[in-house]
Image 1 (tube, rainbow, N blue to C red):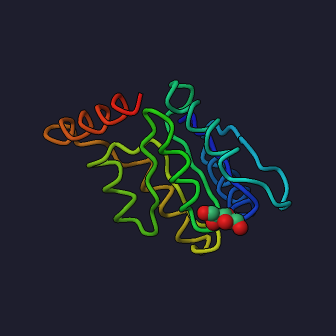
Image 2: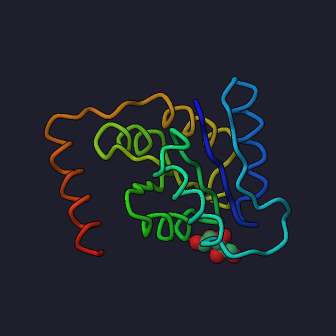
Length: 148
Ligand code: RB5
C-alpha cells in the first residue's frame, strides 16, 4: 500500500518506528517529516500530507503529534480529508468501516509502541462498509462544499 506518514516533534520518534515497521511489511512509505526531534508546528506537516492523500497520491496517511489532536484538527481542514484520531483498535476499525477515514492520527505521547503498531495494522486492514455509511460521507462532503 502507498502510505504517507508525517509528524511533529511530539510524534517524531513514533513516526520513525511506524515507518520502519511499515517498510518491513513491504509498504511504500513516504516520509513527510519532521526529520528531527526539534520543535516544529504540526499544521506544516498535516496540510501537505492531507492534500497528497486527498489527491490520490497515497491510499492512506498517518499523522502523529504529541496527542494526535492538533494533527487531526489541522488535517480535517483540508477538503476531502477524513482524519481519525484513534487511541485503540476498535476506533481504528470503526474509523475505516463507518467513516472511510483516509488519515489515521496518533498521539506519540499517549500510546506505547505495541498498541500504536496494532492500531496502524487495523487501520490499514479494515475496509469501508459502504451502504448507508456512504450517504453520511456524502453529507460530510456537502459540508466541505459549504465551506467553499
Ligand atoms: C507540541 O508540543 C504539541 O502541542 C503537539 O505535538 C500536539 O500534541 C498538538 O496537538
